Image (cartoon, rainbow, N blue to C red; front, side, top):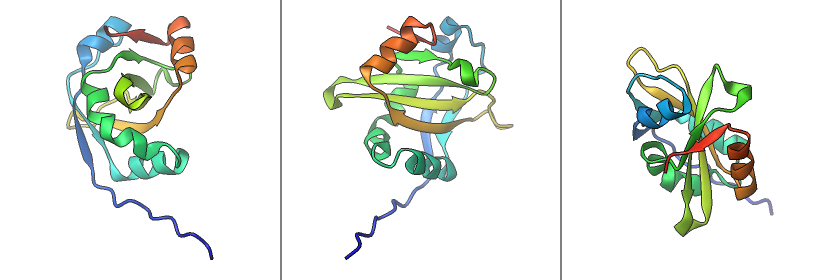
Length: 134
């Protein structure tokens, strides 16, 4: 018998105010705005990271409003930035990728989210792609 995977029913998520002061420290001058995670973006994240996406969801708002690290991948310098939060009680490091250009209404859109391991975090910090906010 084939196991049927249950697909979650998504709704748009308003995750909180973008911490522009932390991004300034990294060198990004962005206007204030809220961050949202649309249904299509959630579906994309689930498809791209099926084994780990749902473990990130409870920590998305916290990652947005109070990241432990901020930065930008050189691959996406013109397109987006990253907010990262170490969630020690869950043993997770959550990365949230956000598009750099807000909508006409001043809302920033999450592109994806997934957990990273401590080696990847340390590597990105060492290379200057992420900086600590603490």
